[in-house]
Length: 263
Length: 294
Image 1 (tube, rainbow over the protein chains, first blue to last red):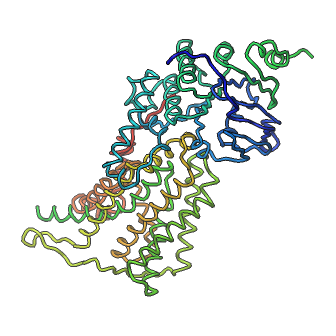
Image 2: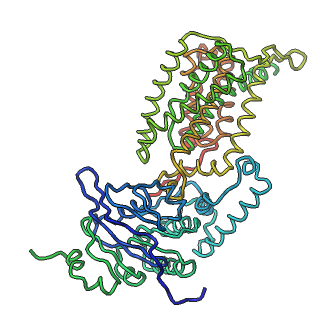
Image 3: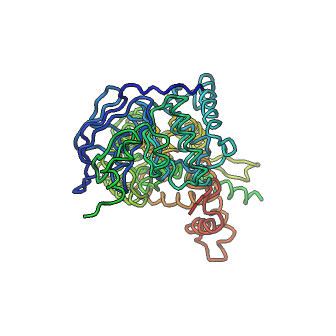
């Protein structure tokens, strides 16, 4: 838990000249950037800039028409979401995608599905190795629950939880997969100040304690400038800025995109 | 009293047959949130293939295996041609798609094997059993049906506790989220439609042995609807209990309430029961609580 000096590593994920369009609408045009190991990268931009589309390309929901994505040295043109998950990419969603009928614990347990190995018969009967395996996974999930401070809602069906807590459960499910790359789509949207501070703390702790690389989309500039190591700015599907927060703050193109330019 | 018991037991046994059909609906509903209108047609389809293979002189055990293979192929075809293209679409679209699938496999099965009534005889004994010094008459076939339904129930409940069972529940709740935790949606759909196909085979063989294999069996699937409303669309035990209630309810109603209406209420009593249930407990006896936040 030592607050060690942060050392950004090699390139973990490389996006090369990605273009994505829906019919005639160009969502992304020729985007390239890198995510380095152990980094917190923020993607920002006005509404409709293509931020979520970018995340959807990375975890395989969308298939870009052009360009490649290289993850851990493996280049691909297309990938299915479950394949991305098994390679170690976990994510949360802008409009929360939880299993609403299940409890908090069960939701987080689904994050461990890929780690479970036991055969059909033994897990049906809950005997022998299957029982041991279940207990191990359960333990891991309880640790995540402790970490996110959601012990009190362990058994509550998530459909009944308030928005802020649902976002936290969703983060927990993503963490349960022990991802090497965590994609967060607006993790703090709709939260009050206190909830935002909690969420920031969790993100920083995850990054610090587990060394997880994080790529997040966020609209709250204060948060973005505080927690991220590097910022990528999109506008109308194009990349208009890429650099450390201080540099982005003073980037004229970024300021124009956000405040508008006088013509 | 003996008469009451006989009617009750006869009704429960008829209910078991409804449960067999309802189980197939529950499986697919649980795994995709879709009411699979084609389940009745799948029962006929599986039954026709089974009878057809036997008619060609194939032994029973091999016919079972061949029919299972056909049902798995059907599941793969449905996933490949229909479901794959409808990921993340509203439920009503998927429901409409299953109506289309229903008409297709109904017609397809009949154009291969013909639409006549054919008898299935796989050696289930049909002699009557007398209980309580001959006061209650039971069909041993009905007892066998109950045993089959019980075995199916246990197998399905155990299956739900497996990794795949968990994955099925996740897919039912949210397609996107399920994909993001690494569940391959296409594989899950093939698995669940295959299992529903196997359940359809069991239902087809049992119904076919009782009534003969005939196209009218597709219509029986609609009897599963009140069963599901009573038991809850998402509960495997609910499908069994719902079937028993509907079966016993309609027989008792016919005998004891029927005379006041001039009889014939057996055909619609189940639907009235279901309607009443919708008003009192819309999620059914065992269904998941409906939680809606706005």
